[in-house]
Image 1 (cartoon, rainbow, N blue to C red):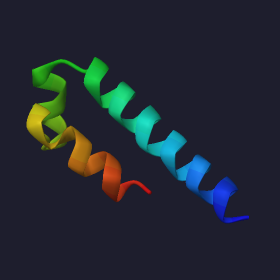
Image 2: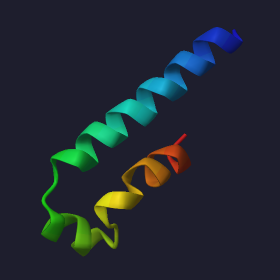
Image 3: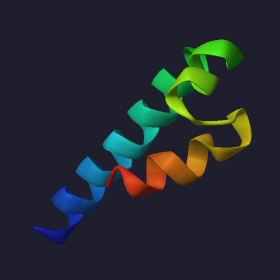
Image 4: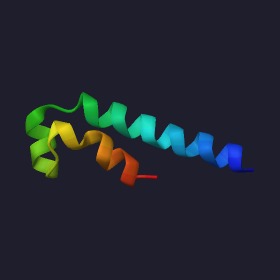
Length: 46
């Protein structure tokens, strides 16, 4: 059970990093995020 939860959390983290990484700096700015914060924001998503 814990393995499944860990995998799902990893997927959410990875997908979030990927999606935010595709945005332009302007789009990130509109969201209040700088590129250096993407991994931190993704960690908060799980």
